Image 1 (cartoon, rainbow, N blue to C red):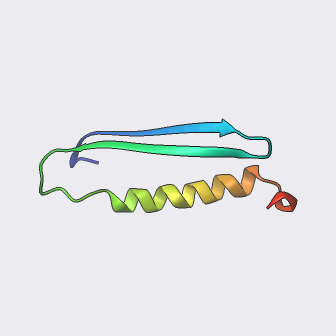
Image 2: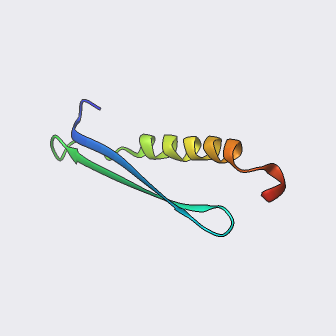
Length: 62
């Protein structure tokens, strides 16, 4: 995180008739152009979403 001037995760959850749709927005500003894109954080976000989904969605609805 020390390579970024700012970093923000935004999550919007839109309820549907069954379940919800989740929109994630990631905004970040690098300190300079030599800083790589934060791909590892994107992969972590996917794993967190899988964990949340497993705990919020009943197995019989999947």
